Length: 172
Image 1 (tube, one colour):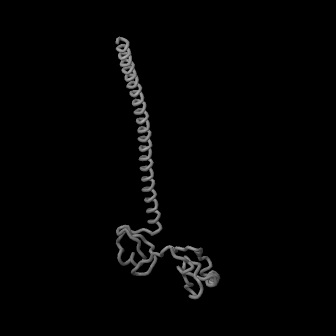
Image 2 (cartoon, one colour):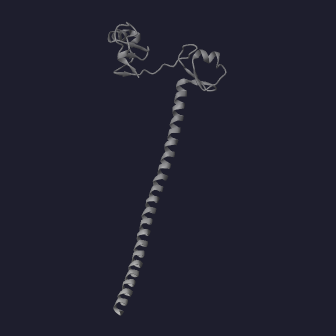
Image 3 (cartoon, one colour):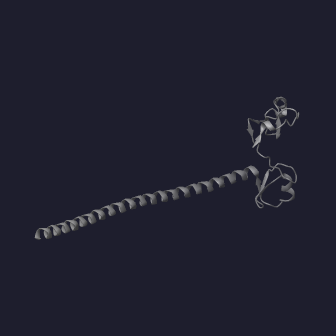
């Protein structure tokens, strides 16, 4: 992120550029900002300010230094007005704002689809976890029951051996 304190004013070059004009793509000190906003043409400009400013990178056509205003559907890329006439003349195009809205809608559909898929998988995991917990409880119950039966059998055998030994002791 760009630190506003490290920038100098793009207008007077002497003061620290703590404010960023989004429309002009310039850093300004407080004095230049005030003068800028007094100008009739710049009266409605918006500024970013604060300790950390990361102005969005402007997207221009590298060949013509123009704003992108169209989206070439055939080439799947944004283009400027000059490119639209020269290189993309017979291509299918739309306004960049339209394309952006369509792309946003498509991204939203994809995200919603992924969310639904994740929810379905989560439901399956929760169901499997519940089944696993029930299986463990059943296994513990069976082991406990088997343990009781084995203990009873051992107790009977121990008692039978003790009786047998007692009987032999009394006979001697």
